Structure formats: C-alpha cells, structure tokens
Length: 174
Image 1 (spheres, rainbow, N blue to C red):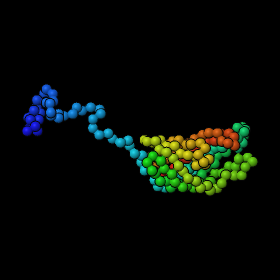
Image 2 (cartoon, rainbow, N blue to C red):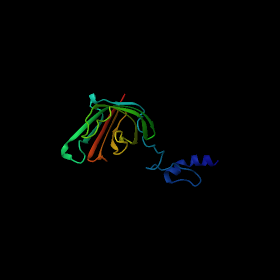
Image 3 (cartoon, rainbow, N blue to C red):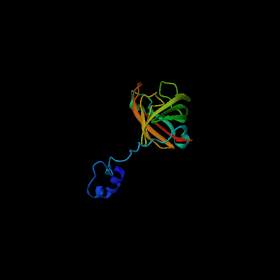
Image 4 (cartoon, rainbow, N blue to C red):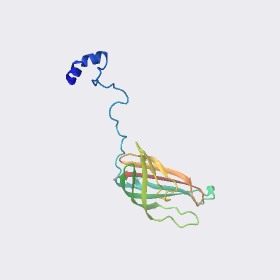
C-alpha cells in the first residue's frame, strides 16, 4: 500500500515537495552520479628504439674539460633499444646503447661503444614522463613527454667530474 501511495502521490511530490515516507527523485548536481577514474596512461610496454640516423636515440653533451668551459663541448650520440614493461604509472626494462658518435674527453678514454642499462621512468598523466638518466645512472633525471608511439625527455645538470652536462633521449615504439 505504501508503494501505491507513493506512486499516486508522485505528481504531488513533483509539484509541491516530497511526501513523508516516500523517496522522491534526487536533485541533480555537480556531485551526483558516479565519478570517472582518472585516465590511464597508454601502454608503453614493448620495444622502443632510437636511431642516430633518424635523429633519435640518446645524446650527451659534455665539456672536454669540466674545469674549463672555454675548452668546448663534446657531443656523444647513441643508438638505443629498450624493452619496457609498464606497471601502472611506472615502467622499466633492459636496454642497450651503441655509440655512433664518440668524442673522448681530454685526458680520458673514449666512451664505451656498447652500454647495457636498465631504463626506469615514472609517468604523470596525461603525458609527462620522468626518466632516470641512462647515461649517468640517475644523476640528472630527464623530464619530457610521452605518447603511445614517442618518448622524448631531456635534462641538464652538474657532473662530478666538473662542468655541466646535457642529456636527451628520443625513442619511437617499434
């Protein structure tokens, strides 16, 4: 009987308010309805490459002599291949850098021709990325942007051997 009374009283409830004991329609407002979860980043899992010949890969700009900025800079460029596994807003995976443009610092041996590393990064949706520096073991984090098919990040900072170094990485999904 209570249901019949509520149904019959619906027009009265809409016209003049809710009848005691009956549930009327809830007011619509900005806080009503289910909340949408924040967008998930696109999956970055898979193989990523950056080839120097395609103006991609990893680049390090280092001073020839960290204590003397007038000595000039040395640009080292690497081909990069990395296999990433994404877990939520972070990913990591093994990678290889192959030196394509070598430039020894004065008084030091040339940089290695092949470097194996682990790339780790954090994603900040919708498209920001923070990568731990693959060349200097996390010393200067690289920040930039990502999409389902492209990762680009760069960083600049002091080096323990002196001077300021710049780092960049640019990868495409294979």
